[in-house]
Image (cartoon, rainbow, N blue to C red):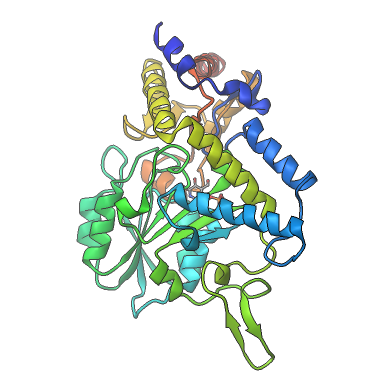
Length: 396
Ligand SMILES: Cc1ncc(COP(=O)(O)O)c(C=O)c1O
């Protein structure tokens, strides 16, 4: 077995993750574990550096404001954007809700989604009153862009697709999706939650209009995410929440608002969250997303080969999925599989993965999902395989 040696040595960052010693953590698609550099940055921000941002005139507050804005610049640069076009939100969910609520509709009433979307990219549009159409998938689990092209009408305001599926790992041809959306005057929003931790992303090269992601899936803290938007679109959007920090002038008769991104950031922001996100991005930059992508592709290939050699294991999604392998063991509920794997110190997610329409399409109630990160290696796959054999032994 040569492959394990290769994959073990590829990134060599496992020791930087204090939470995964003696544990095979294969649930990074749900939330990523944090490297020590991120933990240290958060501790320092709360202990030595803490102060509010954008308000205090004292030096510590000015320094924190500068760090907060550097974090914004880096969070935008990570996906090829400018500092001024990046709004901090509570997560990708809030980012998508923001667009669904605040985007002027220009007389259009529909959104085009796909059958593999996370609930975070379905429910906000429904709550905002859009009519929803869902593009089918190809046989190997990608968003069918030929079908999207055929389904798109002049009444669609937004096409909103996952850049990488959180269940199947399938990677969208995002450039083509942008061209299709724009051909009918619609906008393209990409849900980049699963893409940003595992692929280099460039919003300008893609040509998308909005891009949403969450820090906690990117080795950063929970409670903070990002919405990047094209400047002229953000400029045309009214605020969706009101409060401090987003106003220009308030009287009881009338209130005027700041320019984006401040217009969309009512209230005291998640200051330390931004600092933690910045530390995570610097940590990622030092490794390189190209290297992480190559590492995860090798792990996916090894995992798919190993699991498909086990009789009675069904794999979902395309061969070249990004960092994510969903599977089921015949006749065993995914929750039972995950429970037995837990006894073997292997953490996988089991359930509908917040993608119930996709489960309906696959004809299953749930799947088990192994998802990889920079710290994953062949020992995780070996433990997973051994755990699945244990599942089969127990269920006969
Ligand atoms: C593809 C995708 N979109 C959206 C979300 C929602 O992200 P959050 O809960 O961080 O807002 C997730 C999280 O699981 C996801 O995987």
